Length: 121
Image (cartoon, rainbow, N blue to C red; front, side, top):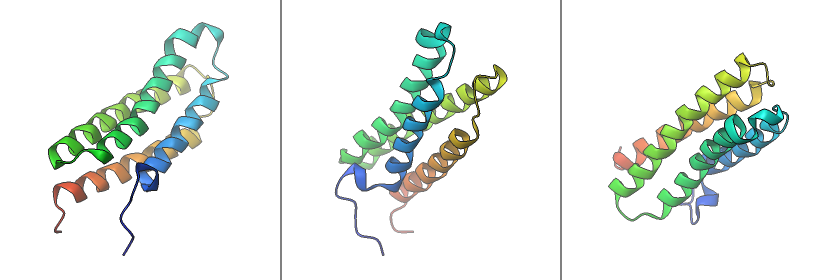
């Protein structure tokens, strides 16, 4: 059995979400200059929101508060899914790594949230 996380940085889901943020920054760095205040900015904000809401939810005391922040992170995951589609359709870069990481974060967050909702299972 794993030792309980002491900080949000101990959570595998946060670690993967942080890697996703770094990947989005690398990917969006090569977007056209015309996208600086549009797609680049929105994509980065949504990616950051995933990791930030996992971090914030980690410290919340009640299950309901934790789940609320994790649900916001899940919403940001879906937003990023769309930005990946748009990036691919506009031919701005290779989304393979980012797409794989986002899928992993999504699955981990879903499992983590389920564990909080049903801790005795």
